[in-house]
Length: 68
Image (tube, rainbow, N blue to C red; front, side, top):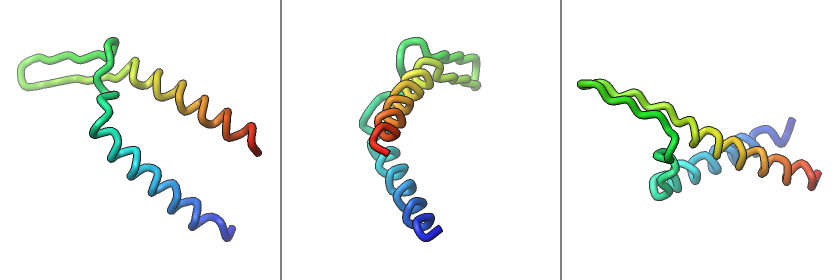
């Protein structure tokens, strides 16, 4: 229970760093993402971006679980 605040702070810092890096990495507009524009409405569904992030996060969690 003593590690919970430290873990939450580390997760917060990691999310801030990822958010900052996402400004420079154009990951959100990959070919295969669905974008529908009609009039004043835009619908964006990041299909391929979601798959890529899922594969990367799965690999990271697999590697981290191997070291435990």
